[in-house]
Length: 121
Image (cartoon, rainbow, N blue to C red; front, side, top):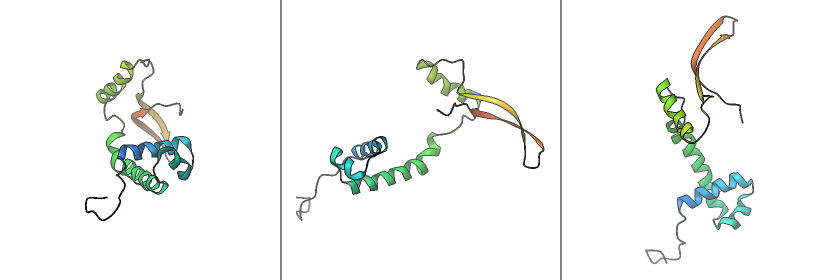
């Protein structure tokens, strides 16, 4: 019975369990129905939670957590975390660089910035 005595209401599912189930959905690449049998959460609940979570993480949290370092000191602070974890330091994660580019009219443009270096993998 719920608090009002009006009928049966199942215990609320913890948010961490819902998010975990949604991440499992992405990892397993299976249907909501198939996943509901594994995690014991209804497909409708997982579907709603998943899309609300994606909206929250992409709109509200993304710009707070994902950014290019604004200066060399911040870049070095970020890279030091990787060095402490045992990653080699000879190839920096970010690099100040100057590139000669051409604009749409063919004029030379010098682009100076702090770029994320990645092999795409």
